[in-house]
Length: 401
Image (cartoon, rainbow, N blue to C red; front, side):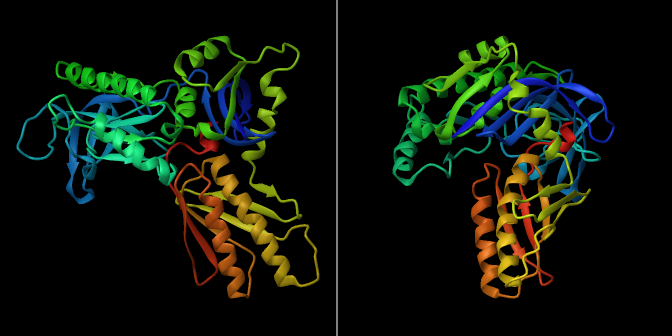
């Protein structure tokens, strides 16, 4: 069972050695941090915010447009995401043209030299549902069991029927938590999200470019809403205001606890600073004495598996296989903890046996399936390098510091 901790802590940038105050939202299994998101106490994020953007130019060769959500803040809009856009200023018969204004939502924040990414497919997320403005189908989380899928599919279709029998002009996705919720709670959330969407459409019609139509809820609430509640034991915070916010926002029987020990802070109890510091180091030691060296670069992340202090002499190939299996589990864990994404190349210790290679790949795939962020093994190259891809959703932990 997992716990979600929400607190504040002083953390140090390992490069600049500067220390600053951060709001920390992190999942723990036992005493081990498994996922974390950090925000500077004095910083704001634009992720998931909805704006009226002005089209700066259209790059046909990239099949994309560049739009401004504020003066000088340029974002990348893939034209494949331009389905059912909500234009507030239309100048031409072209799908999109410079000078036009439309409603967009930020899906990825700017990272290093890359602009933020936006979409015209707006999404409104709740605890059980996601309403989508351009994807008009009903969807169900792949983590929901087969026996619950047909029931929830019927519910989604019923919700999307208007009083006249026609379908709504938006789509719905039922999240994993819908499988454990009362139908009345799902219906109530549906009405709330529908009202928010329709109000935003009405409001946007009279607004000008660069208007922020909707700000995302605090990141720790978003992280809680996105979490699978089936194995979440409790949410713990030592901040009274956050505790009241959680109590107001969360329905159901989930335990929310206010930590009040004045002698030992919540951050110290769970060694948050120490575990974040360890997650930023290049080298990770394994129980066998072997280690991983994790090196993020501009284009990809490289992970090298080394036998290190493991000096087992007997049956070297069998030992290499055991180290690689241990490394595969730790790699899947580190990808989630550090929020590494994009292309990942892993150099496992060489193995001669085809069966061992296939066994390793099968186990690695099994570990990656436990990741809430889509991640998959692509293949093993002729040089023995294993290719992994992991979807980019948030900044890597190292860039959050």
